[in-house]
Length: 98
Image (cartoon, rainbow, N blue to C red):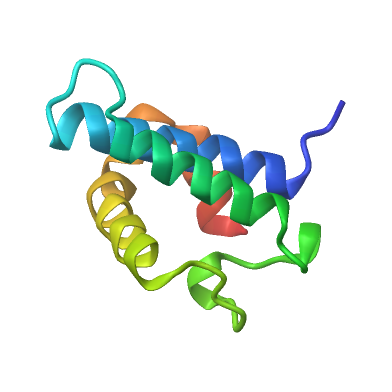
């Protein structure tokens, strides 16, 4: 079964948050704040009004994240984004071309 865009985004964001939590924060398992951010991101993606037609969240005109979570996600992306090529190269390439 082909993975839809929303499910792919959920999978990639989970990898990015996990990478941030384990490597940047130095945790051995996901901390409660990162788990909450992951749940929040998945919920936002599940309820995205654009569905599979969505672009990246940073280019979206809707901005469904609250300001606190949006800043935390920016922090995660700034750290994890450049490192994803080493931890998930195929996902990184897909994300760059879509």
